[in-house]
Length: 314
Image (cartoon, rainbow, N blue to C red):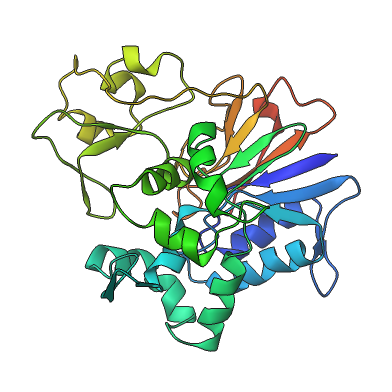
């Protein structure tokens, strides 16, 4: 079987339709049917940023409901649930704050599905159905990082199929707890602290004291931040070139291929390592392209750049 692993869509239904047609999927009046021997898998971040939020969800969930596709949760689906859920420990607040930054990140979805509307409630209920990760006999699928130690922390809180419950959402939203840190790893990736006194400003305007790292590289703790960071060059210029990564404590503990999204890559798609593929090539900006990796379950390795397909919307 060929698994068509589709990267972060972010509410661009037109790009999704274009990619599905390019891959040979055909709409039968109800859902997109795959070519014989194919199945789709969406790697998360279905929502936020684009102007076709509900249309995107309709396409994806119609395919899931007709058992021709699977999906894993992205941090944006998780954030949508936390943004709408009051914090039981501080009822005047939500699990995700309604700061200006968070409102801007989520405004495209809320414009189409306003807080408190039946449509909003419906889609939140569907987000609860999306597992945080999937593992098969041939591969592993997660939005940001395949960290089995973090998954072990989360698993007792989740359903049998690794989906969130209300209790899990609350527990993983409490900063400073093992559950919060585990969720951050799985849906947002591995980070290392910046040297004392340094702060980075991300693309959303939020200040950060940690920097995301390329966890798929070997010997992370022995490398400098410059060698392993996933950050713009302008931000890296603030960091001393000899500053070492600290407190990463991560190792990839599987021999299977691992598929992720999340990382806003650019350029020609290629494997991140002999074992790891990312299918997020910045479809939410005009210069990026919605990207798929066609994975043959009968021949899982080696991973190859030849298996990428991009919808060139321009």
